[in-house]
Length: 368
Image (cartoon, rainbow, N blue to C red; front, side):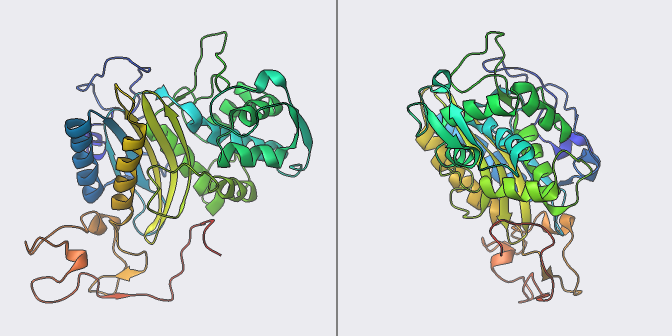
């Protein structure tokens, strides 16, 4: 299947910083790494592509909001289902990039989270957070503040503690992610004297989340983090209070970010069909953060419900393949109701049965 079909409208590998003119006709190229994320193992997720394309048009036509997104099922029977919309150019990350900072901190200090550290006055900045003056905090408290309040002072303190930007970007690169496009380049609300900034793209943000999930599952070829540390990191990523794409879903490990020009979100949706890695970005010319958040929440809930449960069986008593499930919401009998919600022409159900003995083979911090 051609790459252009798999990544419709998504210029993987396209450069471009915030504010650069889009190159909508640029050739689609893939620079994904790793056998389980490469385009040759992707399956076009027809239903999700339809949802993303429709959302991008609604966002733009009705509200002047530009949407870019990348979603991929990363485990279970529907592994490889992929859809994307918009350009994959890098944009300023805002707080989204705190996710790999949390991961790096757990890699370095996972056995020493009770260590007490000082929050230096120069790391206390405006913006989001609960720390407004210097003091001593445990590393564990700083991690929770980063996730629960997106605390900038806590994040800046952890950046110093782990060894600076290079330490975080080394972890990103070690996960097989392009660390030029998913990149920590400045402290929160403190410009880098070099002019560097923090960047994300939808595909690389989703890829980092996927690598973390794969490590937690014990299925990754990358040894950037231990299995236990990956599971702990996913637990911390459930503490974020400002959900966007995952707001109506209920089960997600994610980190968001906001600027006056747009909103970002990335992480893992845990669904009955398996974990879905996602990276989403919106951009707008006038502040529309709350509106964009609401639109993303609606879109996330739509994507999360597209697939049959992982243990669903077809008429032959076999699990549905990824390609068979790609168009699960198709209305083949033309009654205006998705086949998965109604009956086919012959009165049968699209799901013949489920295998109750099947157990999920992916890790979810929400499952006991």
